[in-house]
Length: 227
Image (cartoon, rainbow, N blue to C red):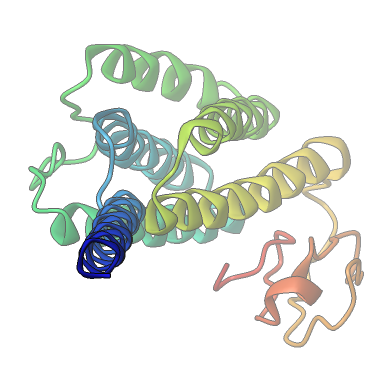
């Protein structure tokens, strides 16, 4: 009886210890998963820092083209690009990263490819207003392709959510530039729309692009001002 009792106690202790060990391993796995969900990977960090520069690049080109043409779409979308930059800056601050565009003036970039592309596209964009709209299309298509690639490899919730929001904004920008490229008429007066409620609302040859999704004001160029 004593031997059986001892064996039974030993079995109970073994099962208990195994359960405790398994539970501990599960907790460790859960903690690792939560850490992965809140801390960016090395690839995500690279993408955050580059996208911060790319959004500045877009903003700077549009600011330059607005100075040349004084067409509202460039001023409005440059403001939107600034908000995109701000969203990325919040990630940079959250993860204690070094901002690659801190205090850099318009047209200056850490990335040499963006510096060269800025010169190339601004020179093209001042040739004509149609060329300027084409530059907008080119930039937004580039932005969309890069964001789609970034989203594919994003595993951190905060990072992925920011990239998805930027993608939605860039798709709206692209639609607005494409519309203006195909329909711009400098002789047609523009009446701003203050309360877009549908996906496509018109005001004198100008289409509000997806204002119904952001529920914000739609300006003369067809973009949501607060997108």
